[in-house]
Amino acid sequence: MKKITETVQSGDWKAEKHVPVLHVEENNGILNIKAIVGEEIEHPNTLEHHIGWIKIFFQPEGAKFPIEVASYDFSAHGEEELFTKPEVAAAIKTDKKGTVFAISYCNIHGLWENSQEI
Image 1 (tube, helix red, strand yellow):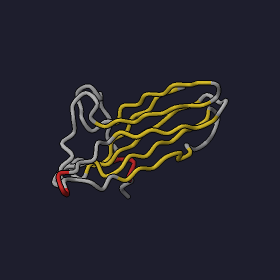
Image 2 (cartoon, helix red, strand yellow; image 1 turned 135 degrees about the vertical axis):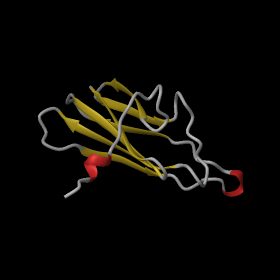
Image 3 (cartoon, rainbow, N blue to C red; image 1 turned 45 degrees about the vertical axis):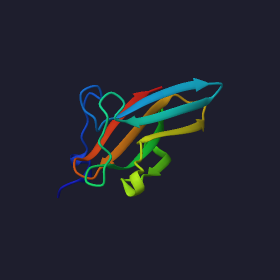
């Protein structure tokens, strides 16, 4: 049986435009999270080739599973010369350390992930 997790790709976001870049800042128990696809190498984001969505998860240290904290769908792919820029932000309140995950979906190149320990 094939698993979807076997199709998720990763890489160095400085050389691969599909990998979501994570910026995480902690401020008084608030994690401010930004996930950007194409920060170093811009993604085309046309009707033919675009990022469809980005999801952000947080897995507290010691927890069995990550928790989905944000989900963004992108719909503007050239209609009326309007193009989505795949950049998202989320804020969560926690006093726990853990790992932030971001996963993005490109309609041509599939699923891409990145993570950052906090």
